Image (cartoon, rainbow, N blue to C red):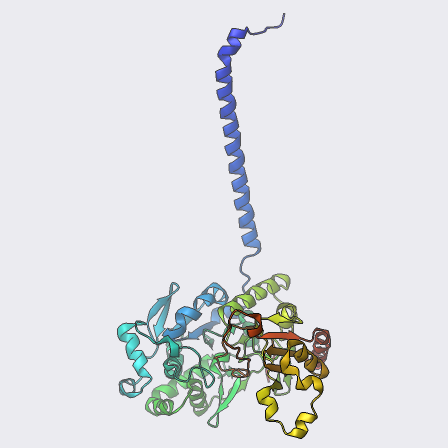
Length: 489
């Protein structure tokens, strides 16, 4: 007969069985949870490895020294985003400023200590430097600290002080890295496409004195625009550093009278026998916001060439372009075609264009229609306007219709009482941002009225969407004539 425990025995065993079941359940739960956590961590680790930062594989990486020139009035605002993006792929860089400090864990070096003491005592712009040395940022009037160049804050002492950094900066960079082959100089609102830059530099002989930049003229001097970034080979840096040390008094007097340090540097390089190489369009003075995507200079359509820098980039734009670059290089491994301006437009800009974007200024800088503009017309010129044009400033719809009437018009913007249309395509920016910086379009973008929260008080923009494909096709046709995406001659 099969053994059957008595009911009394079962009653005695139940507590032990229950405890065992509970222990087993808890054990299995924690084992499962542990396995789950381990698997999740493994999945995250695998994903991080798979989607980790993609950096260039160029052998030139160890030979390039990147120098960022900034100032105390902007460093804390503009530098951190670079440490999280582009500079994660730059193995050797330094930051020069007008004050020693730590920004986001990185040392920033004062580069003005070699300037003549008499000049530092007498030149008005050095009042800011004295303040920084003695008090740091305490008590600074930030109302005048932002913007640069003729279109920026005219009383910006930080910008006026900046011109004194260029010659000390290049001299100090050579002292820091005497064996580097290439020295790359950028500003904290310059976006550096490091992969493309390394590819570009590989086309040049580093044993020769190269001064590579975006051309600019001022006071009869040809020089490389600092905000667009410029590159010096070691031989060029050695020549200009020698000139700086031999003619320091003369150069400082020229700096005292001049308005831009990059101009003084260009003049000193020229005097040292180093000519500037015109690298346009690789190095750009505009941002993704302000760039006219059909821009052509020196018979070069930027659209067809590889991009290397953008200027006046804010933190959001830098992050967007960095993330796009990372995605691009994951999908297009090293050794493929370089990233061109048209690739950036088609993959990063084009999908942001709309028939209407509220609270957006697309920087339409063509013809303006407003009561103020119309009253300046002669009666004959006014009569020659279509009925739609005469009423363009009265509504968003009439502004759009005015653009549509003009065969080459690609975009428009409307603020109550003002309509602007343009044949040049730009992305623009959110309507609450300011157009303070120096660029091709600075000072010409729509200055929206102070908003009251009502939609009617906010600038609205639009693109003629059915013209975009033709615009892209037209630009692509230029590329059939471009046999090399790099300007090396």
